Amino acid sequence: MKNTFLKIAFLTTIAGSTCFAQAPQPAVIEDFKPSSLNQPGQEYPMVNSQGYARFKIVAPAADSVRVSLGLGGRGGTKLSKAEDGTWMGTTEGPMDEGFHYYNVRIDGGKFNDPGTLNYYGSVRWESGIEIPAHDQDFYALKNVPHGHVHQVLFPSPSTNTSRRAFVYTPPGYEKDTKTKYPVLYLQHGWGEDETAWSNQGHANLIMDNMIADGKIKPFIIVMTYGMTNDVKPGGIRNFKIEPFQTVLVNELIPYVDANFRTIANKDSRAMAGLSMGGMETKTITLNNPEVFSYYGLLSGGVYAPADIKDKSKVKLIFLSCGSKERPDAVKKAAEELKNAGFNAVSYVSEGTAHEFQTWRRSLYQLAPLLFKK
Picture 1 (cartoon, rainbow, N blue to C red):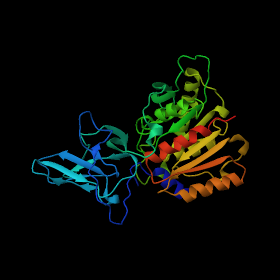
Picture 2 (picture 1 turned 90 degrees about the horizontal axis):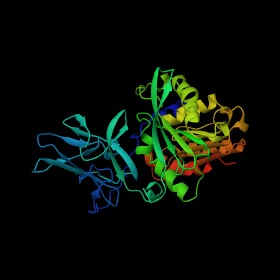
Picture 3 (picture 1 turned 90 degrees about the vertical axis):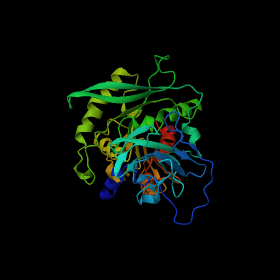
């Protein structure tokens, strides 16, 4: 189980992000529209109502162009050269709903698509595309009161520098100067950084919309870099949690409690993370049962009853993944925890894999369960 968990936690967001059926695909509907993540004024890439993506790259002197998305792991989508020197192509099948990283290979070199915005993932700024989801309303930008995402630089004596975190404060935080809030420490995955949950995950919009709908009581979210990206493929067993654990527990949490209106106790503090951030969450919560009461692993492995010495200190264990990952293992782990007397909840995102639509949905399911009296 340990080795399996480590493999799951190390998967990048790209891994498994597209999946195509082996059966012949239906005819492509020509209702393509520019992706919502395109640069201003850029027409391509495009997506259609079925979830296909179409790309156009201007590279008149190139001999070969392909996009990393598509073909189910068989090398991406090959583009064909048109008479005007542009290269065009469409994925051979529909992609999973939600956000995907990708890059463009031109004569073997790796580049970003100049038509799209860039997002930090896979240890580089990558192009991004959004396949409209049937349930995208929960993270849509709406005319509701909005919170703020603050960039903070906090002192870190252990690393001899100032480190960066992003702190989401809910709507009304600045006006009501007396209310104190619980805090969720929310970690990104391998290859990403502290920008991921806001930029790719829309965590702030998910919170704004749920607060506006009365589905949750407001709380603060803190997102910081998990110090994971020096780990090379195949080297996950060499990852040492202690440096980041020191930064989070001994430096960042005291800084947040001193500079934001928090309820500074374990019963009002949660930690969750996706993929490798889940691995960090599991290790840190088990090492520090006096710090956190709510635990969340999003495509980041599972807890077993034997992992936790004192169940009275844990108010919630939330486990989730996509239906294209290992949902049976997540469901089984939650049942075993329930049978052992834990408040455990499992969630499976239907039709998604190791990707941000899984984790957006997971946060949407997790948030109402946090900080219950």
